Amino acid sequence: ALLVLFFILLFSIGQYVGRSSRFAFGDKIAVVEIRGVITESSGVIEEIEQHVEDDGVKAIILRIDSPGGGVGPSQEIHREVLKAKKKKKVVASMGSVAASGGYYVACATDLIYANPGTITGSIGVLMEFTNIEELFKKIGIKGVVVKSGEHKDIGSPLREMTPEEKRIVQEALDNVHQQFIQAVTEGRKLEHAKVVSLADGRILTGEQAQRLGLVDRLGNLQDAIDQTAEMVGISGKPHVIYPKRKRSLLSLLIKEMVSTILEALNEKGLELNYRLFTPAGD
Image 1 (cartoon, rainbow, N blue to C red):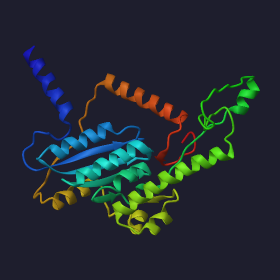
Image 2 (image 1 turned 90 degrees about the vertical axis):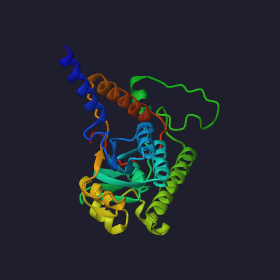
Image 3 (image 1 turned 45 degrees about the vertical axis):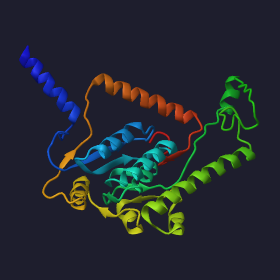
Image 4 (image 1 turned 120 degrees about the vertical axis):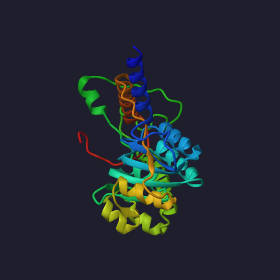
């Protein structure tokens, strides 16, 4: 029984500390992962804060593999990165894709690594609406909305948008788009006019982005780790702290369920997105 308890304890510790022990001696580099659609920021922000407060962690690498997501969460992570940079070096390492909101986060870091074929860029904002008015007419259903103001049901799927409503939505999009452009201009230290010329939603490969000044260097995660270690004066092979790996089936199911519900709610709501656009079904 004691032997079984011992192995259970070892397994639990292994799941908690991840691939590289948090209890390792010497200077460390922490890796924070940003994967999938960015629907919330609290987990990433909490990890960044913990590493900033840990004197043994000399630098943070954001491993980004995301097509973007909500404007709010992307901006919250971006702001946390700017705060972290005041105390420690923060480097971005792009995986398969780091576009739109994923790039918004990356442009706040000290240095950006991308693979030559990484899909990045997509500097823009979008809102998606669904109009089911004609469908309701065919099946004999009529929607009724009671509202307190003329534009309170703006974007309603029960009717077509009016020209005035389209103007209001476009102004909001343009304002958030300018916020994105300003973040890239300041983060990458580029001319505002140059960023404007690139901020039409186009996607870029890592190689193209480097030529345009949106990415610093080409390389994988290990290249980013080696360069970061050199930047902060770590000699030899650095100790790397990877994210916690909890393989509880229940926690994975709950996380997946919550993520699905949030994404479904976002699709039905009026949410602004820094997200790479893909046709339905892709």
